[in-house]
Every structure is written in C-alpha cells, then in structure tokens.
Image (tube, rainbow, N blue to C red):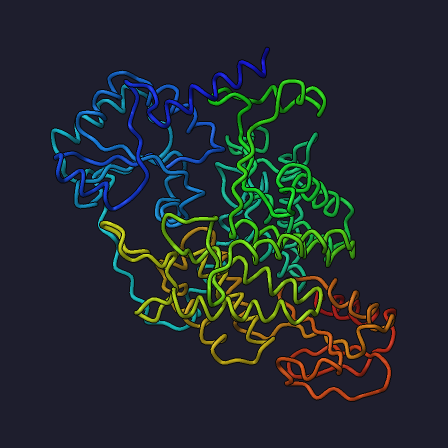
Length: 590
C-alpha cells in the first residue's frame, strides 16, 4: 500500500513538472529559442535550476510551484524553464554558489534580473514574480561581474602566506572540517593536510585525523555511502542525498589516508563507500549512476527512514536513483576506485574501474579524445567530462602501467587544450558552447585546479612541454588574488605545491610476466600520496614515454626511487623496496 501510494505521488509530481495538468506550469528546457519566444510574447524568463536528489527542490515543487497564484503569474508573465543541474554542468557551474534550488529571472535578452538561493515559500515567490513584472530591472542580487587581472604566473610570497593563514583560520578546531555552518569532508583541504602531515606537520595531521573521524558520522550505517553534508554546525543533522561527487571524493581521500596511516578505520570507511557504489550506483554494464535521492517520498523528510536497517527500509521502498550515466561522474568514480585498488591490491576494485572506463570509452567518446556528458547533450561539450576521464585514465596508468591509459589521457589533454582554452591565455572555460543567450562560459576554479594538477603530473609521465604549458595556463587563472582567496584556500595551495616540485618517482624495471617485478610494482603503487609518478618499464614494450632516467639492466627486476634529480641504488626485492620507502616516510615526517 505504501509503495503504491509512493508511485501515485511520483506520478502526480511528474505531471506537475511537465505540465500534463491543464492548469500546471508549462516547463520548458533551456534553449536560446526560449528567449526569442519571451521577446515575441513580451514575457520574462524564470529558471528553476534543481537537483533531482534535492529535498528542498521537491518541497518547492509541491508547495511553491503548485500554488495557484504562482502558477497564474508564471503563465501570464513568464516562460518557465526547469533544468536538472546534473544534466547541465555549464548552468550548474554558473550558479553553483546559489545552491539548489536556484531561481534566476531573466529579461528576454538573457540579462539577469534576480538570483535567489534555496527554497522560496509561495508568498515570497508571488511577491518576487509581481515585483519583476512591475519593474523588470536588475535587483540587488545582481552585482556587476568583478574585473579580474590575470597578470601573474605564480603565487606571490605574500599571497601564499595569506592562503596558509586562511587554511588554518577556515578550520573548525572544535568540530573538525573546514567551514563552520555545514559539515562535510572538503577533499582539497583534507588532501592538503595529508600532504603536510606526510612532510611532518603535526597540526595538519591532527586536522586531517579529526576531520576523517568526524566524517564517519555521515556514513550510512545500513547501506554505506556518505550523506552530502550536515547542517547546524555539527555532524548530527545530515542531508541524506548521496551524490557522486561526495561518494567518489570521500572514497579517494579515505583510500589515500589508508595508504598513509594504515588505520583500519580509514580503510573501513573507503570500503563502505565502495560497497554502496557497487550495490546502488552501478549499472548492469558496470558504469556508474549519478545519485540517490534524499527523500523516499518527495518533499517528506526521511530522517526516520534512514534510522532503519536494510530490511526495514526495503519494506518501505528505496529512494530514487538517478540512472543517468555521465562521463564526468564516471571519471570521478573510476579514479577513486583505482585509488582504492592501489591501497588494497584487491583485483575486484581494479576490474570495476576498468569496466566502467571501457563503457565510457565505448558510449561517451567524442572524436579527438573528448567526451559527451550524456548519451545526447543539449549543449556542451563540457570541460568537466573530458577532464574527469583524463584524470581517471592517468590514475589507471599509474596503477596498471598499461600504456593504453596514458595514451587516452594524452588524447583527452589535447582535446582540452584545443577546445577549452581561454583566448586570454588564463585558464580553461567550463563549456565549449560560447553562444548561450546573455552568457559566455567562464573558467571554474575547481576545474582549473584539477586541470593544473592533472596536466602537471601528465607532463612528468610524457615529458611533453605542451602538458606543462597547460598546467601553467590553468595556474595563471588560479593565482589571481580574487580567485585564489576564495574558500577553501587549500585548493590553490595544493596546485602551487605540486607545480613547484617534482613528484616522487617510483620505477620498476623488469618483465611484466615476472613475479618479482609484479611484487615490486604493487609496493610502488601503494606508496602514500596522489602526487607521485609510478612506472613499470618492460623493455619488450620499447622506451618509456618519458625516458628521462637511464636505468641500468641487471637482467633481473629492480626498483628505483628518484627524488630531486637523484635516484636510489637498485632494490631487488619487495621487502627492500618497502623498507626504503618507509625510511623516506620517516625522514619526511621529522
């Protein structure tokens, strides 16, 4: 009975969203034609940018967009657009600071009049809609875009010092994590703390450990996976949606922590997230789905539901899973799963990552190394899809030494350089389509940080100046003070640290059929940290892609550790390699 009621409610909601009721809102997709229609009909345009997993988006549908007065105002004076932000990364990135639902009103030229964040009750919505009709000029929520000067190629010492101070000041010493109102694992901040801790910073170690432990409160005890965040400045008020960005990045960070500290709690958390992905967000073909809803019944809080065990939940039903298969979300999940493989050596994790990668290659590829977002894209292509897959390919190469993955990473890098570079020479735009009404896609901070880190590490694997140039172009955007000083400070500090030094270089020389060589490579790939160059040279495959180190031939497998243009003596056993790497970790922590 309850499940039948749920399907009935969902059917009614679907009708409301698509205007199948005669008196509903005639929602349309985002197109330039909408603005032409608005001009002909002398109407404004309202965008409801929602997330299909979002509780308050459901409440907005049920209360605000079902209100007769709101419906009347929209039908008479507006063209209404509804967009799932996961399906349109360009729009999502454009308004990400507003949270979901985001409500934006435009004139018929595409100029913004109002930008509102979060749930808007019916009375407020009526007042806002009428006010726009009475005075269709930009309100106080519309601020002119700040002019940013991109005239530096690196962080100045003074700016670096400010960011380091911000990194500490942004930390909640009482409750853990960076930020004070919403609690979640900010992966850039935790990863930067891991890097500093590996170099011997005890304060950073405490911050990372406190946050990783506190974040365990947001792990679903029945199904695994992580809730998006907790409100009220503590870890006890979770929002229950499970989105891929949180799953993949939490998985990756806990796997990195497990490699660094060998704490069973970190590995347990990583495996809980991975099992959730396997059980709920993996398609029959092995690719990854996008998200799971926060609500069992749209618009109804599900705190009591998520207190239940697996069997009790399933009796009531399972919150909706968004079964779209996006290249970007798959890139995140593949890279994270491959990182877990590096930490555990469990071949099942590697096979899961490889299966998803092959599916995306077969079903989302564009000519020249790029990727579509979905099976068909309304716009795009988007930088995030090709970048996420490029990072996944490079991680697959690092854990397998299979050169096809490095080739795919290079192809994707070339596609990015060809299609997304800003004419200013500073950064890369979030989308290729530069003809949207009233808006030209701009660089996004998080994407350019990820791109700088990817391209810089790719350069050490390939030795190609074009890869280093890409990293420096992204950096030029990031080091502008107006960009660098945004929250969190760790995002740019990570980029600056990696681009300022060479990665630890771990190389195995020996046949891939040799058991000793395989054991050496397993130790090398599990070395802590993401910023490392791990290679396996089987001479039968020809020279390494970047043959910058002349390794001697001992006629038996050997491993080498190279740092700061110096290489160790050859290490012939897994035990000797592990001992030497442990000594390096100890020296770094002093």
